[in-house]
Image (tube, rainbow, N blue to C red; front, side, top):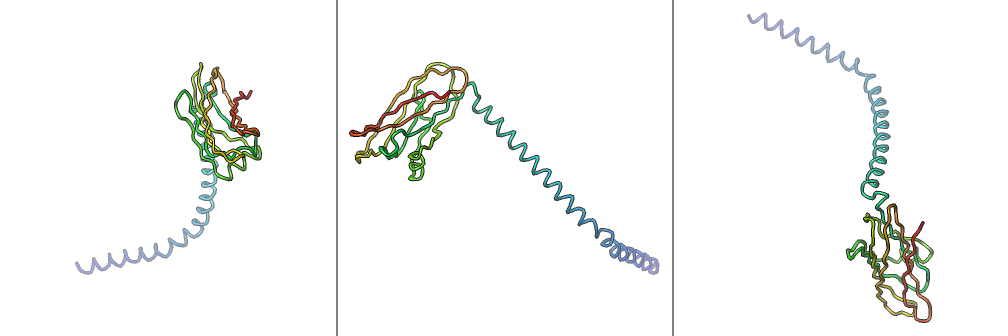
Amino acid sequence: MFGIQQAQKRRIHERRTFIGWLFPLLLLPAPVMAAASLDEEIEELSAEVAGHSASVFALEQKLLHPANTRLAVFLTLQSRDALDLDSVELFVNGQPVASHLYTERERASLERGGVQQLFTGNLRNGDHELKTVITARSANDDFVRRESVHRFQKRPGTLRLQMSLEARAPDYEPRVSFVEWK
C-alpha cells in the first residue's frame, strides 16, 4: 500500500514539472500578440465611443431644444466704452432663466465686439414677455440698474433675439434694444 502511493506521487510530480517547464514556452509569443490585438481593439472601441458620444450629443440637443420651440437670446454692446457691465438677469414670462456676473475678461471681450449667448431654451408659440435687469457702471462713474421689457410673438421655428446695450454721452443712461436675427 505504501509503495503504490509513492509511485503515484512521483508521476503527479513529474507531470507538474513537465507542464511547468513547457507552459511558459508555449505562451511566450502569445502575450506579444495579445497586447497588439488588445491595442487595436481599444482603438476601435475608442472610435466607436467617440461616434456614439457625438450622436448622443446631437440627440440630446434635438430633444432638449427642439428647433420648432427654441428661443436663444444673445447680448452685445453697442457703446463699447460707455458701460462697464456688472451683471445681467433675464426673465421669460416672469420666470428667471439666466443670470450672469461679468469678470474683467468677459467685459473686455464684449467691449471688443464679442457676442454672449445668455439663454437657450424652449418656448411654446404665442405671445411672450422678456424682461432684463442690467447693472453697470457708466462712463461718468454712476452705478446704474435698469429694467427693460420686450414683448414678442413666438412662431414655429427657432427665434434668436439680440439684446443690445447702449449708453451715449452726456447722461450715459443705458438703453436696451432687441432685434430678431433671421
